[in-house]
Length: 263
Image 1 (cartoon, rainbow, N blue to C red):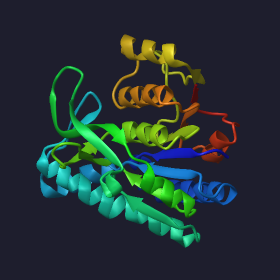
Image 2 (image 1 turned 45 degrees about the vertical axis):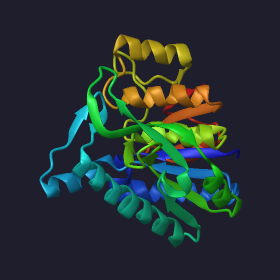
Image 3 (image 1 turned 180 degrees about the vertical axis):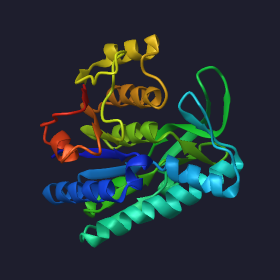
């Protein structure tokens, strides 16, 4: 197995049984190819839950979270302090060493503030503009799994910015010279205008889905991230469902039966 980045959406980590199955598959992959696996995780639903408990409204625009300072601080607590550390503990149960990091650690990922496509101010939402893979490469050399939260430091203001998890995964894959990027989702595949799963896509077909508006909601930033990953040299991208039996093992072994393959 060549270097692979696995993006785990926060929604698939909420279900204990799904999480257990995914962890088991990742552990198996790590045993087959030590030092070649990177995990990037989201935590959108967990962030929303904390914001709700704090009495702060969750707002979205074009599939991206609108993040004021309170929401940004909540994202830091959830992503770096809860979700990432929980994954490290789950891997440890299987005897696999991993390290939870955010983009600011080792100045690994630097960002700039970004607005929505229509110019809407999204607050503390950023886009990765520089990757420094030294820390991640050192962890891989030590045969540990880097567990990366979707937070990055602003290049100029050194504030933490919330990064869309899919764009973060694309930046990690490109910056760390990964051969493959796998998005594990609760959706399972890209769908056409009739709601049917699309088995494979190329760059032009992705652009058509975006331009036509067929791809909506959270699928838009995911497909834009796929384009970024392709442009940065990632050879193959797969969007798979967490609920499908052994879907992650299938994706890495080029035996994908359900999902969308992009190259």
